[in-house]
Amino acid sequence: MDRRTWNRVLSGLILIYSLVSLAAMLLWNPTWPISQDLTTILLVSSLLCLLALYLYNGSVIRKERQAWMQRTRQLEEEVAQRSEQLQEKNSQLKTFMEDIHHLGYYDALTDLPNRRLFLRYLTKALESARYEGKMFAVLFIDLDNFKVLNDNLGHNLGDLVLKKVGEKISAALRPLDTVSRHGGDEFMVLLNEISGVDQARQVIDAIHQSIQDPFMLTDDMEIFVEASIGVAFYPRHGDNIDNLIKYADIAMYEAKQQGKNQSIVYTVEMHKYYARRMALDNELRSALKNQEFSLYYQPQVSIETGDIVGVEALVRWHNHILGAVNPSELIPIVEENGQIIPLGEWVLTTACRQLREWHDEGYRIPKISVNVSPVQFNSEKLVGSVQRILRETRLAPEYLELEITEGVAIFNEKAVSNKLMALNELGVKLALDDFGTGYSCLAYLSQYPVDTLKIDQRFIKNLQNRDNRMLVDTMITMAHNFDLRVIAEGVSTIEQYNFIREKGCDEMQGYLISEPLSSDSLIRLVEMYNQKTTYIKGIS
Image 1 (spheres, rainbow, N blue to C red):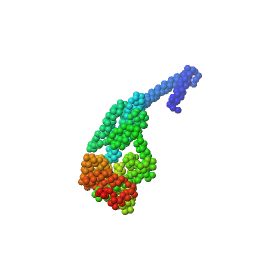
Image 2 (cartoon, rainbow, N blue to C red):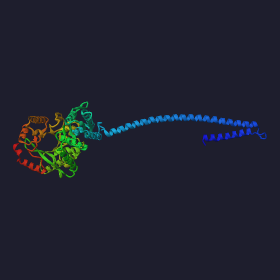
Image 3 (cartoon, rainbow, N blue to C red):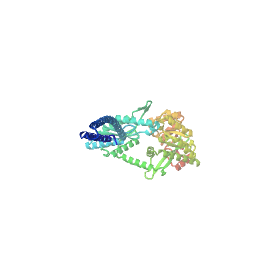
Image 4 (spheres, rainbow, N blue to C red):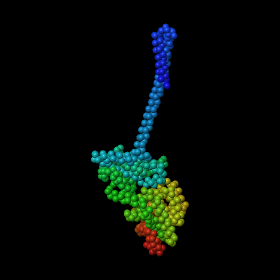
């Protein structure tokens, strides 16, 4: 039993004892065996016991009250502490929820609104425009050649470029406009509540100029970035969000097709191109597996002797649905969808195997040239792949020439030089293709182990232009000063041939000699050259 129960029992017994003592004192009789004084003592003792019990219980109650009050204070302190902890937890939870919300609606790299939040803004703009009869524009922005820049700079600096571009676009916008990072190197812009096309054009031009303005990426690195911009207007081009984004995307691709670094407004005619591009992309998925690719070969001729000194391997694609596909359509798509590396390996393998077969058949074609795309060149597996393919096809490396575009050489010179040196050590020849179209620089002509310089056909086709004639003359002289051989591409007239021969160009290729040929047709041409019966033999 607990203390309270014992108190009750003891109090009851003492009370009974007191009542019995009181009764005994009041009813005392001389005949009893005890004296009256004893009964009085018993009564007094019982009352003293009651008093003692009362005082004891009072003391115990006071102590319990003090203990209870102390416990209450402790509980109050614990409640206050728990309350502070709960407030802190609520604050952390609120911050956590805000972070989740931010991550859900803002791009982690640039801190710009992401696609989800941009679609919300676009939905509100559409509702407002429908109700108030206003106009707005959707811009699709894609950086030009960012893949090459990112691969050469490294992904950390590439990410920094994207952040800088996002800041530059934001700085060019009005307060009511919104810019969003759509993904990769793509941005989208909402030009809200515009008064007309002219006002939109002013903002678009400001965005374009802001992107193009050079900026310091690091303390010692200045960067130039260009972009292609596609534009779609509400309500001119539709009243559906998905369509407006798609049309702006189509217009952006049209800007790239027309030379990049420009802005173009969507037109209905562009939709045909977009539909074809989607069809090409879909068919490409199985093209290699279905063996739809083939190689054609364009001869390269010595201007001095008129002999065929090599052939360039050019990929062709004939699809059972789309028919023959122009390489200008094919290459950009495979570079974007990641199929350029397997396709490039197939081209290199097929070209090397073909030259080995020609040699086995007795046709001594001195070399075969194969284009290497920037994406393929930047692959860490390139050198190993070339070495493996040469071994598998049993082709001596001196018969293979790899052509890299001039744009590959402009970034990360050390990495480019190391890779070119590794290829050179294999014994492979190296040519710089499309020279003069981009960032021509004497520095990398002296630093890189390049054997041949190829003058882009755009210069050759416009030799009637005085400036182009001067440029071609300068390129030939410059290349010879660096002990490089020079090939002129796209030679198609006697006038062009006479000019480059006069300027000392070493080799040429183009329709004056032959269009790209199948393997069998090329061999027939080689036999004709060996018999000295072709037209170019006569004029050499």
